[in-house]
Image (cartoon, rainbow, N blue to C red; front, side, top):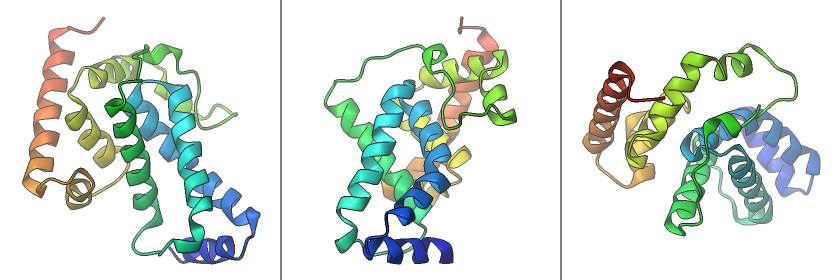
Length: 180
């Protein structure tokens, strides 16, 4: 968190390297979250880039409070929601994602495209967006339910229920062999 505070301060002073460092620090997690929510790697990259461009453009007025990571995740999720609202989103198969977030294949990227992971991602794509969002933000984003509830504008109990119902539906879909 102290590093983020220093980087924001440097960015406010006009140091472009600070923005690059923030991007490198958070891009993989943000890309993964956006790709899981959208089921579209190219759109995920666009959204993450837009978030960082907006951060840089509005840095003069940016007030750093809390965790920058949660702020950036919330920005990504809000842009995903906007994309759905505009109805310009076209569903594509997750298989067309390709590798995201890194040029060198590591264990996480390799596992992401294993057969089991593919089934899980297809199952996630079948969930209602609100349930998928809570599951991804909690498991991949590491956000607490109170943070997710605040981002979604719902009570904590609603966020917890969406998580529980989403996992139940995902379990049902995977066990029933509906996918594929």
